[in-house]
Length: 101
Image 1 (cartoon, helix red, strand yellow):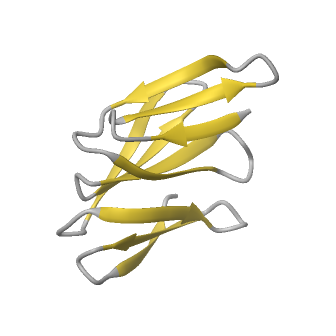
Image 2 (tube, one colour; image 1 turned 90 degrees about the vertical axis):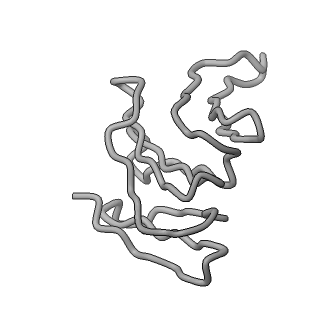
Image 3 (spheres, one colour; image 1 turned 60 degrees about the horizontal axis):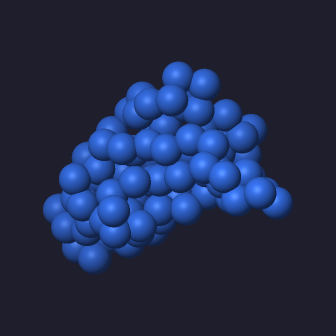
């Protein structure tokens, strides 16, 4: 499975080797800059030009948490290896560590 996000404001999971779309998520209001699976593989995090970071639950097929606190576009995001924290970096000059529990 491969995870992508782009200018169309969507994230997609792709199955390989066929390249078929397995899941698509929408909710951001601007381009996606980053996306990353939670270490457990049950959730993912996305960052966007809309200045938010979102947590998505794959089994529910939807956004379960929107993290607000950056004042400008968020350029990247990543899970900590323990799966309890998300890091984000913004063009507002800040980086944040979010406790998602």
